[in-house]
Length: 282
Length: 357
Image (cartoon, rainbow over all chains, first blue to last red; front, side):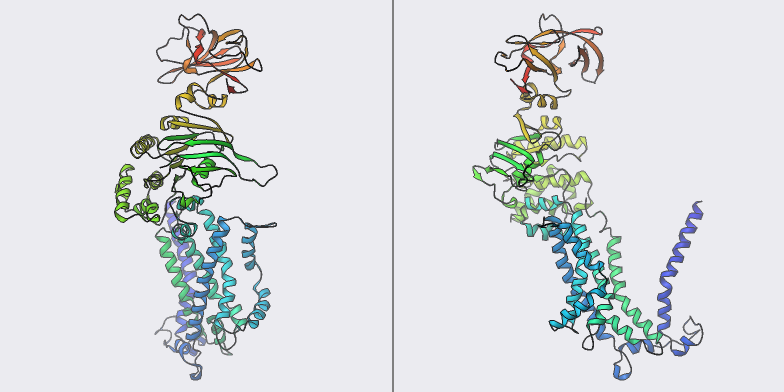
């Protein structure tokens, strides 16, 4: 019975690993292939099945004049927009969440929970509904096709995530912590900064992770709100496609585009395994 | 360290409602500097509200609070210099034990050497010395509560240390030792300690003054002895003491005697000015003994059961429809199912409308 259990356990782990890793391996080998190796039948092993070359990768950094696509600038644009928007969203979101968790707001029938729901409802709406208002809004303040404009839009998209996660998190941090800090001599701001916030680092990390993921993978708004001046990575990757699908450079760009998320996942995982997210309260 | 005056304090959590519900009904009280007080009462009687009002976490709907005759009603919590320990451990997870204990001093800009000295002294008292450099979150629940307690005691100059059932999560052995430590701290530093509890034994052993509360009302304040021997109301008689006070519905028969089931019981209370003849007679089971050679205040009862509770025997008997309980020494022989019990006149408390006369 026990042996069967262990066998099944490892069997499913192997199946799952193959399921998760195979696409990456496929992309990795494909990125080193040329036209012949991709279209000339099934090949897997470099140097045996096909002769690897760096053409797929070189295209990504060559300037368009030399027949490349140059994803370096869009890459850093994406990094900049995602990180800035996430950071601002986390700061604003955390402050709003703390207020929503600790103080009572009332305007007619609108109370704390309604305000929290209002934030979340921004994400329930299909993004397409927002596209025209965003377009008109950015064009009216002259921020279409600019990084600043994208950051503004991404804050609108990411802040609800931060508020949603942090309200829930702060609700689980006992009020007595704030009260104790006040009794110990902090004013309400110090109590928040010195006591509540350090206690909420796990929540901040989770919120930050979601903001970065959702910001990084957005294609829709990056596509609609930019034209020629600035481009973000997802838009550029899609632009790689042509009448002859360049599987090699698409694979290479797919790998570089998931790299930051893998790094984020890795950091969060390390943090998780140190037990910092579990039992943070109580 | 300060004298704390609560003057006409009352509090409602919904004061703007047409029918506000009062968590605390108006009361006035003075806590003298350096005394130990226990606030005792069942859950939801307003004990915690009272503490929060003193610490400033709750602003009373009416009344004033004075620390050493200075009005602090509108002063913020952080400016009141008060310490409060909650029922469940509250620790700063991201800090070490030392940093936790030093936090109240750090917030008030104490010098490094003074902080060191105070933290070490408190850690010594609470047996936390060997953990000072460990992360606070790694400790067990009762050690965490010791940290909370330590943060409350680390400042010497606080107006009072307010404790809201602080020993609930601590195991009985340590509890006993801590209560003694708290008493020592109080005697040594003359810190005013206010201790909220629903456990009468805890209150009795800890405090020199007990404030008994019921449904938002302060029903009696006094020493453990006073509360035990002369409960102001039938509630206090019932709530304090184990078993609860014997209470009999009875009728006044003369100026100093009452009738229970045709038994005449003399009391030392003057009963001539009562509005009604219906009263309640209260007597602690500790004072009821098997009659030896007394010739008055005797009642014949049917013994229902005798429990041996280790250091005493508890007799439960029937006096007509009433149940009467008597605590006697272990050695006492209970002759048969029918015994005569003696109710000493000087121990009888007479209640009209549940209030002591």
